Length: 254
Image 1 (cartoon, rainbow, N blue to C red):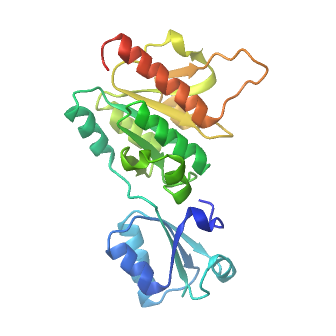
Image 2 (image 1 turned 120 degrees about the vertical axis):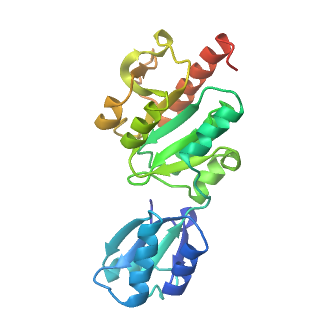
């Protein structure tokens, strides 16, 4: 999360405000706590953060003061998501209700909010049942993501999971197989991308991480005929998502 981009986060400061945010059910992406602070109210906030699976970081006073908009952070600053997260089970239920094979898009370390917003928009128009992102080393549902999705975030559920590899293992037990995007993969036109599928798109710089790639059943490459040998993450995700759509149409699944 880009902490210094105030437009991208909904910052909550002060012990009472942060505690109320947790107790009211607001989705908190991340909590920063003054390192070494162990008084009662702060310990209560820490317990709430752990109970809700929130990312928790202990930081120095200088960092909190630099981030604070009010100068009255009282040792705690929370960053709230612009939208609430869904559950992976909700996505599978939506596919079942529509009589469709699950089609999920998993994003491995997307840090650019514009790319995340664009991929959520693509997921919506391609008929995907949801998007799954990791909690750490990835952007959350910020205001910029919401704007870039052009309204798709109102219709396409996004789940945030602690461990992407473990989530993939659990989904494999439910019959879903995975294909990831990589320039060195088998040309996507040679692959059978029908059936219950999870499309994995890697980060802007490093692509799909090794552990995530090892859990994928197929590695799909996008044919490139120009001088440039790489694509923006959201563009690559869109191309592969629509190859899945094309194959579903051919098989009468859309």
